[in-house]
Image (cartoon, rainbow, N blue to C red):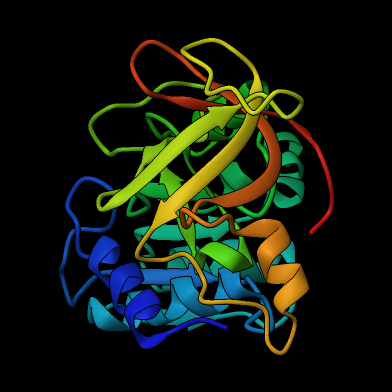
Length: 233
């Protein structure tokens, strides 16, 4: 169960100039992420709080997607890694005027450094932004800062949240460049699973830390890198 506080905390990140978007009502967003998933719902509602114009696609069609980027002068769009891989190899991109596009963000699954760089080059962008989150964290809790990009990284921890890497066998808190399970704590962590106390206690410990089930590490500058999946939630 997500609370009002969870959602409000998410919206605060949308308006953060480093982790969110520049607040400009003229900005056009194109999204094809489904609303039945927390990823699509939280990002789209966040766009609304910023006053953006939103173009919605219910199914992905390459030509219509590119035509919409051109016609609506879209400045930012959100994709999943499978579509990023598709566009990294698509020859159609060069046939459209995408000069207004300033940002492509990727989420929903880890994006490889190679694909990210290929997409950025094809769309003439400096970088592709990444984010990492779970339904249980409301939205992304790791986001590529606008001014601190590290290719291949899924981002840094967002404001008002904490993250740690824990050895899944010993429970020891690990340091930089040591691989373990990601734990999160903060205002976007869900209240509980509905009518399932046992499942809630299995994922949120007595100190309020949520186990992600994902294996990762962070570098000396606090950028995180997803390595593997420990379990399915």
